[in-house]
Image (cartoon, rainbow, N blue to C red; front, top):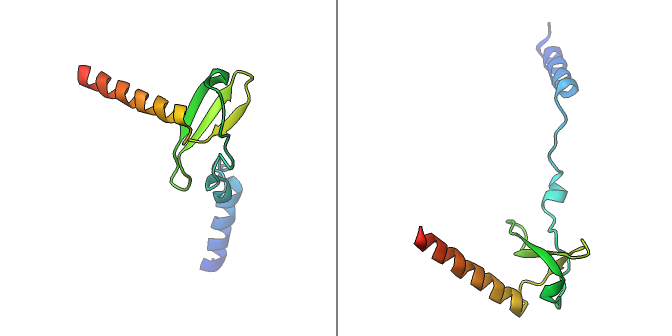
Length: 98
């Protein structure tokens, strides 16, 4: 059997029987979740905060509101900066206690 024909048959077999990939296309992986941010959001509206740091995007903060809506919060907001500093201090104290 010709080697080129064998290579083509093997390649087609792999393509046909390979499981579908669950990976996202590169164009979706490189996108930042937060394209715009909210600059004024009272803390009382927020149910939970999520922090995302990816290599291609700046530090992103996603707030899940009590209405179950998600918005991106500007990480430069004063109360958020204070919250993060306080959380870091608590984590350092907890590490020292252990």
